[in-house]
Image (cartoon, rainbow, N blue to C red):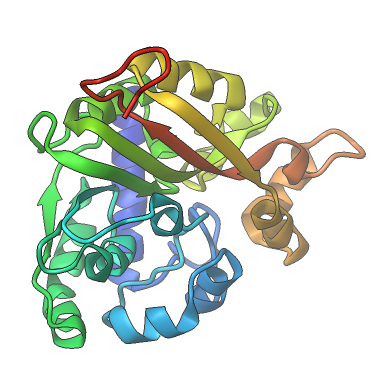
Length: 288
């Protein structure tokens, strides 16, 4: 597929999810990024606090599309400006809001009109629950962020960058918008080794956050080429293993195409990705 084909497919599928109000795109869960029958159970399984979800999230913000918990690895503090790439219905953006407080700001960016409408519709519920009005949502592609240079303290993203057809450009944009000393806290799907050709070509697998995932060594190279330092790439293999064990339709299809004796978890993993943009004082021993 061309870059435009990929973007159109992703936009259409995630628009369908927003309209349906769940991670199911249709009669089956094929084509869903994190096809969870119970979005709350999935969130708890990957490290979210159930009481925090109940206290902060407006109804409909959790579509079960997470593969990690970027807010937990971001170590947010009051007053910080956070940018959420592919913010969807607002799940992580809303959870980050109370962490940065009234003096901070969270900006969600998404290219899917239906997701953007859903997130903006959830703003009033977020304010009622928290008393805060520090979250906003902007239309845009993560390859061309509608954000000024050096204006953001932290960039987060949850299972979205793998969907981009131009990942090096995404990482260059992340570097551009971060302030000197700013940091990256991303959860995403990453390939440990190349997938069989048939899976790589499947649209369902691409939109399902599998075929579009970067190889680990390529991911490391992209972050370095963008100028980011202090890289930490931590595999979270339990996510894929859990979906496979639960007989998820997409992972069952992937399993059928893999070599005998292997499982999806041998090829792909959820990963916590942390990095820093060098600060003004950066020398070989000082980068913040």
